[in-house]
Image 1 (cartoon, each protein chain N blue to C red):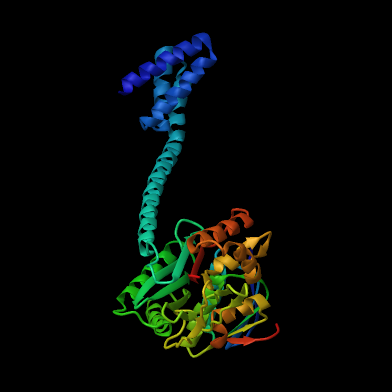
Image 2 (image 1 turned 135 degrees about the vertical axis):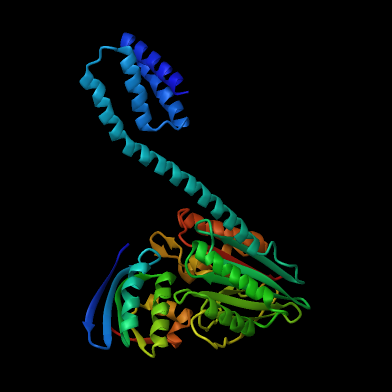
Length: 333
Length: 105
């Protein structure tokens, strides 16, 4: 193998020394690529060059011949750097693959589509800023035409947030029967408080829509309050929420609130990435978010949340730094 | 985006830190590094946040970590000089109810 390389290289050297043409230099570039593919390190390349030169010029001065030994030594460091670079590339590919798997796993933590509930329309969109999200939402079937909705924002982003998300999901799944908003949050707080790093916390709003009475009962743990749209008056109201974020203190109780929905009324819950989106250097804020939501409310729930997100994404100049989740539930008219 | 943290007063028991700049996911680790050892050594740590231009939830996480550390030792974390925006963030997260917050810098 090596002998063949020396012969090929010598051939190229001979023709270049004779004609001194551009295309021979180009051929050398091609050969260099091939040598790299064959994993020939730089010091080996110098050895090949030295050997070819010796064969080409048998009466090469001894000093020039010896100088190649020095060059070979000099090249060893470059060879090591090249191998390190290759190892890093391989490591990066492995990590990339692991993240890909984690992204796929995270997707399975989110429900596929909201369950159908009589007289209720549900739409949800959740878009991570990077590849893994710190936002989480869930639907819980409370039976008897009642639907539980959860929207949660886990501090930070990326892998730690994703791991926390799985804890929330499994804690919710573990509840043997659906519980009311306050009790759900109280139990989740206990789980989070016991299991997370001291500087980690989670915000959540949990609400249950009763489609018999058309009442939405909810409680919040430090989560940005949602907005309530009254269809008849075409007005927005801020939802009241008070309650400590999950994971900070033990034995916390969460106050429950309720809203009665008339036909066409909608509740919009969202993560703080939405109101903290920067538009022309300013935070979007709640008031501008309401203005942004308004024109899209005549659309069906799922299309509405998608249109709201798209509008926000455009206004933020296609650059949203935080995860964005918008959940809309509406009593059918 | 930068944050700077300066020690203002230091007695045997209490230390005041003046935080300025932006506290976000990139700078929060610097605040944590400076703050946590102080919380372990002191009974009372006061954070002057009047020079903070922006703080996100990662910054809030650092404050919670410090709060928990001091509480476990029977100590106290005092926050002062918060901007209206930061106060609102503390209100939404319910932290106003459990943390010591003082007006003015």
